[in-house]
Image 1: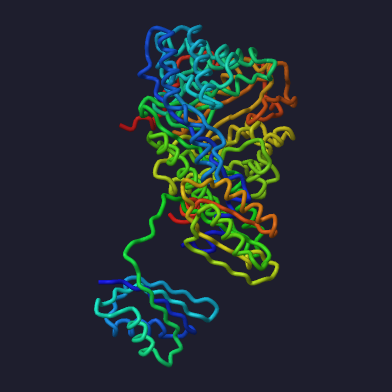
Image 2 (image 1 turned 90 degrees about the vertical axis):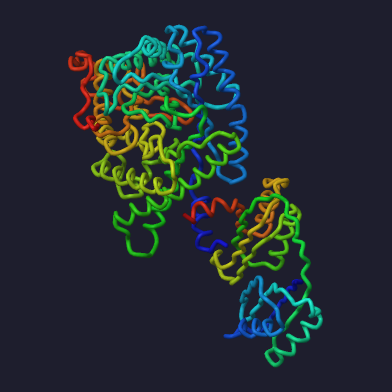
Length: 182
Length: 458
């Protein structure tokens, strides 16, 4: 059985996952993994599905579009290779920033993380403006390869903190887990 | 994924208070080093300490850096020397202390504890040799710490040993008179000494312990104080003492979790078992790292004033409860420390005359240590000193808990004068001792005070 990854984007409303998953079922697809999120009022869903050998990806996209016609759901289908990205041994850290909103903040922080060959595995960023630093927050979960120097990444982040007047913390995830999860 | 509240509360603890691991202490058994040849014994212990401890400092620093939590002190505890070095005489014991000092220096640790004897029921020849050697051993070394257990709930109080320790402490003070009796800051007299204390000066590795083991001392009075202050300053309803005790308990739990994480990582890297977490509030002479500040945060004008014993009872118990829940193996002293010279606010209370030795003694009934780092007048007589030690031992014996004394009769100085010990040991005003040069015929009877009725548990 081959696999495909399907992304969907639409206005959020009750029943939107039911619509997409029913269409997938009608096409003979079996859902393996789903992740969804809502930003502002937009729904975004990513489905990894197994697809019957008899159906081509292009054909699947046409079938889904047809079935969901009138629902204003933007569907994208991409074949998924079996092989997973090889991951180096790494440690998971949490990077948090608090401080005034500026254009280019996410780009600056993620560029610093990328320069140290570290991978962002989860990101939440909220910029509400206002004086409360807790209303302008970025929380990154990142995997830092064991071969990387954490101190040097930490120094890079500190210089960003100075430049953008942010408070930046980087801390091993196990510390948060140990303190908060018992 | 962690939620935002979990992240904020953790960052508060990490960024706003002195959260660190106070000590990672590597216990090393010296029983397989025994020999009746002094040179061979010395070379055996040196080799063994080096074998286990050579990477201790480096690994602690690396793990501290990885987790952003500093391991402040790296230390070694060893089997009681009076047992491991049983064949040797007083002058040879001094030689052994010097070897321990060199071995500790070689591997870069600041203290090595276990120049110890366990004499609650009686003294062997080597116990006596070790105790007699303490003044010379500790004044001619930097890093060696001595502890002598003279009492226990099971065995009672060995008053001959108490008298001998009073004499030893006076001699040690005299030998380091130029440093305000500094050697005495490295001598602890115990009742019910635990075999796995990571904190100095009382650390030694007990007889029933493994060949090598990592014990961790977590601290964090600053964290507790901050949590209390922020709870009291929030706009919510003012918490009552039940709520405040709960807050201390949950904070102690969090702090202990961090300590255990670091300790287990160090043990894993060194390839030796993890022993216990000692969850104590251990202060340093730094602002924001004081147990005395917790008293002030909780509404007392100073530690030592009425209410102090009740407050300390609540604090000590909450710390134990939180820590016990956080860690599967809790040991050592586990509670709140009140070392006078090592805590800025406690030292200030002594200086202002708000903290007497009698009040300190009362407080030790409900906390985890004893009369710790208490500077007393240099002319306090041996028998009065023995009386103070015996009182403190009795508290431990009857209450089935650890108590200890670390008393410094500062040569040539009187009550109200200042004594300076330097570094972590801090400085303190000398506390008055009533009738300090008077007679004390009670202690001079010697012998053993029998064990209490509740020692008969079998």
